[in-house]
Length: 173
Image (cartoon, rainbow, N blue to C red; front, top):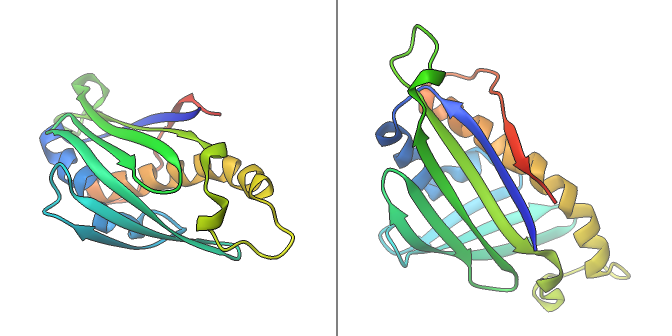
């Protein structure tokens, strides 16, 4: 299993941060390769999100289910098709990280655990003579870049303005 774990600080309380983390339908604004998100459910536990991804000559719809919500601390998800993957958004108060002109701060963690070799090659329409192993090798380094981009853009939405964020990478494949 591969794991990506990164975090950054947003200058808001966990109660203010969590609605942004939970709003999957807004994620196409944050992720370059995520084109659309459709939800089946009310956004709570058990809700299923179809995440329409496009990269290079590939397009794919990942189906993700919310498996647990402990607002404003944690949201856990799991893919339910074609790939063994799960993850969590976690928000922890970190008031000492706030600069003098901000009241408080929170640390936002993004974690994804996945088995790239569990991908169902039949679920993705691959170009002729392109193997799933080649795709895995190309996608793996881009996953961290995309995760970093999502977190940075998420913080800009939370705070209402773009700034350079300090991303702490705790673990990568």
